[in-house]
Image 1: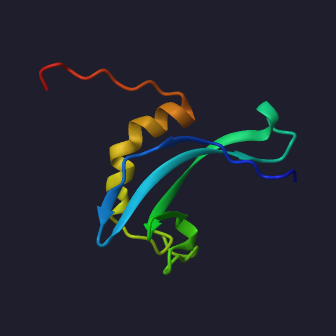
Image 2 (image 1 turned 60 degrees about the vertical axis):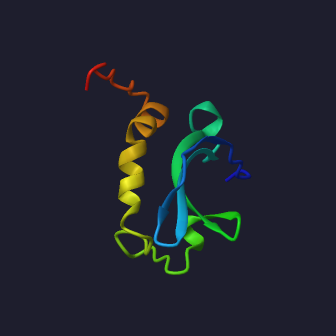
Length: 103
């Protein structure tokens, strides 16, 4: 495994859940060097704001890898739904649907 390099490609506008601000980040991460494009892939990560510093979701106090929601707030689904089209575009290359002007 090579050294991990993470370049942020997208940061969502934060939302407030309870007393904490959360955001969704799309970033590169390095995988095994044998993978396509030098092993770089895109992934999503939830981050939360702790006294002016953004922390990765796995540092959330109740984080639990064995929980369906990883011990993080279930309302993060709202943030995911808001950013779903951007995620589909950036990670899967699926174009964003054109909206009707009068919707």
